[in-house]
Image (cartoon, rainbow, N blue to C red; front, side):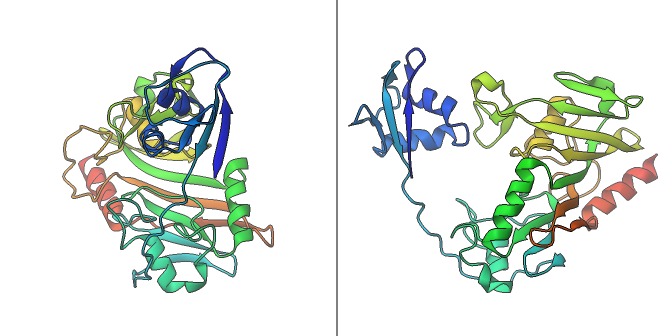
Length: 318
C-alpha cells in the first residue's frame, strides 16, 4: 500500500509532519518506515526523520506487507454467548490478548478461534481473522467476531455509524460527579454525563494513551457514563462508548480523577483488598443489527469472578 501527500503548511521535520497527518499510525512506526527507506520526498528516498519538509513537497509513503505470523490453532477454551452462520460473540476472560502482537505471538484469542472455527482463516486478513473490534488484555466481556467477509464489513460499519452499541461496567475510585473537569458535562442530578476529550498516544510513554489536543494528533473520543451504585469510596459506573479509541474509558476516567480500580497503567491508587487480574472493567452488553437478517441482537456478558468478588467485598464495607 502507498499513500501520497502534499505539504501545504510551513516547514516541519518529516516524522512530526507525518504523525500529524497520518493519525492512525504511531510516530514510532512512521520513524521506522523512514529509517527503512519507505518514504520519498519529491521522488528521492529520505531516511532521516529530522529532514525538513516544506510547502509544495510531494511525499510518497510505502507500507510493506506485514510478515505473516505463525497462526497455528490452539485449543484455548472459549465462552461463547452467541453464534450463528454470520458471527460469534464471546465472553473474553482477563489475561487473553485478542490478536498476535510483539510479545504475544501465541495463546491469543485468534489462535483459539482458529482451533474452534477453522473457516475463519482469511476473513478480514491473515493477522486478525474475523476480529471486528478488540478489548484490552485484562478487560473482560462481550466481543464480536465475524464468520464471513460480508459480516465483518457490516459489523465494522455499524461501529463507525454507531448502529452497534457497547456498554461497559467499571468500578472507579471516588464519585465521578464530584470533580468534573475538562470538557465534561453532567445532568440528571449529576448522576450521569459525558466526557468529550480527544485521545492520542502519550508523548513520553508510548505504551500509554492520553488526552491530547486535536491539533497535536488527538482524535475525537466521547464516553457517556452513568452512576449505578455508590460503594463507599468507590462507584459502580456504566459506560457507553460513542467512539472506540484505544484505552478510551481508562484514559477518560483517569483524566477526570476517577481511574478504574486495578488499572496498572492509569491508576496509582493502592490495593482494594481483592486480587484483581487487571482493571475492573467489563464489556457488559453488546447490541447490534444482524448483518444478514437485520434483526436486533442484544447480548449480555455475565460478570466474571474477580469483578463479582470486588463488588461483594466493597458492598460488605459499606
